[in-house]
Length: 344
Image (cartoon, rainbow, N blue to C red; front, top):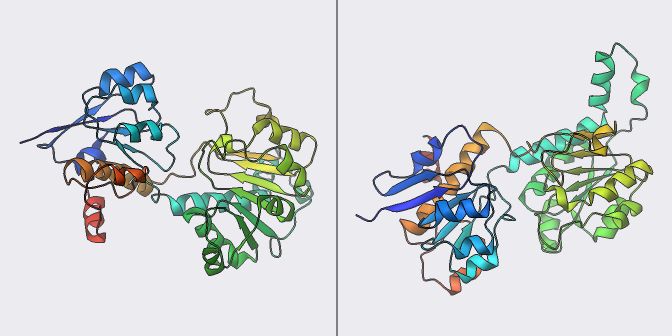
């Protein structure tokens, strides 16, 4: 019986129990490696049939050092750790898990929005310091009638748009890849980035990190925002030009920010944003719930099984041009199958 070697390049979980629960041990050898450098990945994964990746670098050099690898799946949505073009050249399928935390991230974004709008953090800190005075929170404005601008209009911002509607917010979005009919169906007006920045009272960022999106929110965008506007980022830190954000806050071009992600994580202790009272932080936690973590890990393993065991494309294939290079079956996970997986 053929046995495949699957290496988890790195992880932040207590163990790999969920991963083992999905793999049939008699068909797979699961190896945990905790790699940090290219050299460590090459050494640990040279003879692997599949990789499951979190943050370890998947550069062209690394990929060229993989002798047998057929598929790499990534914990989470973003694939910025992986040189996808180089993987495609080597006929390695790349897969992610794009739908495991839609509720978590949209809920967290909404929580940041409400915390900022109602100045919850400031009020809490004021009371704990011994002062009972609502006037420290001035000014607070009602949400109803305000405009929320969504940069990106995939599944997460679409879920957020539905959640804010009962609060009376108008919603606009910028997404050059989203068909206009999707916006109409969701009751959201699709506009240009420039229009969104100038019209919105709240701006929320929901795009993946790519060469195109890196630094896409910079000085020009901050200059066009309203002085009372604030920006939320629950996507990837480098999408916002941090130096431009700092300057916009210092110059009071915008009122504040709520950040779950930053350019360098963890954020350096001497970072100027940490000294600003009008900035709320959470430690890249928007994705997290116990259920979301479990789903992400199990679906990452299912992508490996798709290719090795079932001879089919991963359900969440990223480099779709692989379909011109390989002759595999189409993946299809039934609802019943996912129910069985999640019961582990």
